Image: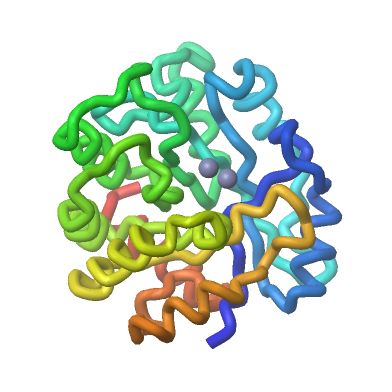
Length: 251
Ligand SMILES: [Zn+2]
Ligand SMILES: [Zn+2]
């Protein structure tokens, strides 16, 4: 198996990342990818409103660059134990919240744990409920690197709920290189048991990392993970999986 898309990539819009959109497309081409998603941070902690919501909305991302399909996206912080996301309560105009406005412009919405929700650790049950809330959010396509949560949670409940909603659980290649292998493996085995779709991403902050999934292949083959559950194996499959998700979630 060679995974042909990468749907978690940061650019200069994320401030702490380097590449431009064009550099990402060039790196994706070089890595043999068919499609990528630009998913800069949307975070009330890492940046102000203008630097996240408005900066992402203002990004110029052509649909195709040099043969590589370009998708729009954002990686948004989980902010409370109901699984709500940054800017969910900030009005954008008289009809929409900032989060609604951002999500409607995106193909990929990654809900990620970055800072303890509500500025506290929460309980095992609360952290589990945070993920269940995010999984059920019709706008959320992907749960980003759940292994980086500030405490443990019910991984079985997450896999079951994600399978029911067809929400993708991310296999984050950057996390895999950072000592999270055991917890990632445990989550993957649960995804395999409950037929939960996963999505393999680089989480690149540097263009050279785009599409580099070496360790991912080793782990997936070690646990005999079914290719059919890899939502982003290629661009056509990704589009189909997103369509299934859209219908199930009523987006
Ligand atoms: Zn992240
Ligand atoms: Zn990221």
